[in-house]
Image (cartoon, rainbow, N blue to C red; front, top):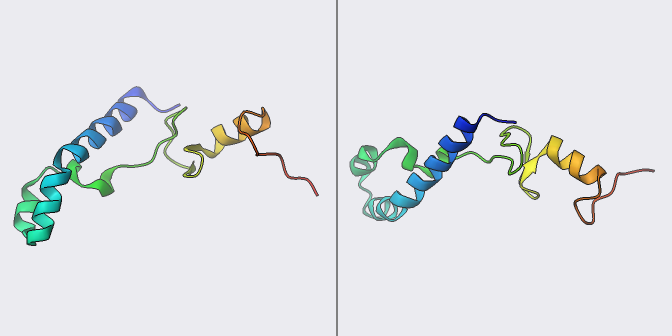
Length: 89
């Protein structure tokens, strides 16, 4: 499980991105790159990372399911994800 501080930091980044989204779009339309540079770094959407909803892990994230590979495997084997079964051939 990820530290609480990392999860909270990521939430704060997402709030900053939402706050400055309209301003960033306006500056980009004007091609005012000097104005963009004056905004906070965390206002850029590329700085946000995907995190597992259950564990907070950021590596091995499966976008389709919104969780890490470890959490996905655990949930799939316990039958908590509908339509997912263990492969056998």
